[in-house]
Every structure is written in structure tokens, then in C-alpha cells.
Image (tube, rainbow, N blue to C red):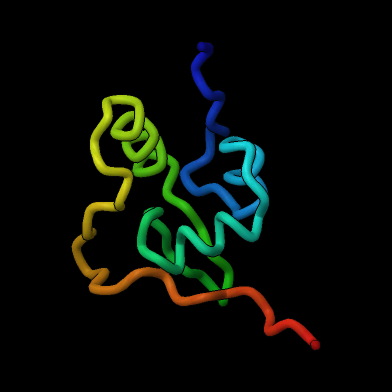
Length: 87
């Protein structure tokens, strides 16, 4: 299995992370809301720290729990950022 190519910038967007993990963007939002993915919020947009995502992926490869470790200053998972569906 080849190594995942994480973009060289400090934070990943939902779209970048979805492409990296080969998931739908909706699943990335769900994982962030549940606290399973490390994330931050800036101007209403979810951002994923690349270094923490690397560690999260390595933890999954090593068979450890994929739940994100609590970060200093972050007491709760990222709240949902997707728009309410019209329906």
C-alpha cells in the first residue's frame, strides 16, 4: 500500500480530506461532528490540521482507536457546519 499524499499546507479542507480518505464529504462532516476526526473551525468553515490527520491515519494503521485525542483548548467535537437540508 502506498503512502497517502497529504497536501503540504498546514490545514486541509473538507474536500481535500474527503479526497485523501476516499470518502464522501458528508462522511467527513459526520466524523468531525462525532469527534472522530481532529478539526478546527475558522469563519464557519471546518479545517483539519494536517499533522493531526497524519497522526490519526497512522493510529488507524497501527490498529489503535481512530477517535481523535482531545486537544488543548478544545473541549468538544466540531459542531456541524453543513447547511440544513431543504426538505
